[in-house]
Image 1 (cartoon, rainbow, N blue to C red):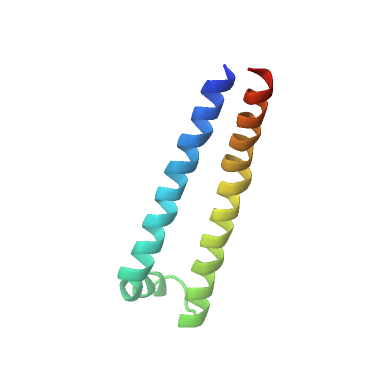
Image 2 (cartoon, rainbow, N blue to C red):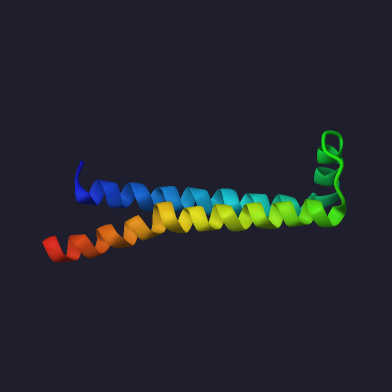
Length: 84
């Protein structure tokens, strides 16, 4: 696996993960009541708890993207400039 391939792979992973995060945010904003009713069939929680869980989940997902996609991508870019 070349440095360029690994770098491109991580960039595409980051872009796709941000697309998932954006879709999650849009669905949460536009279909909030429907999502709450759907999850309310399985879990009994207050609206504040429901919102907090989604907010924390989105934050954790964003941190995961940064740690597992963007930081390695930047490291490979730095390494590529020093090697090449």
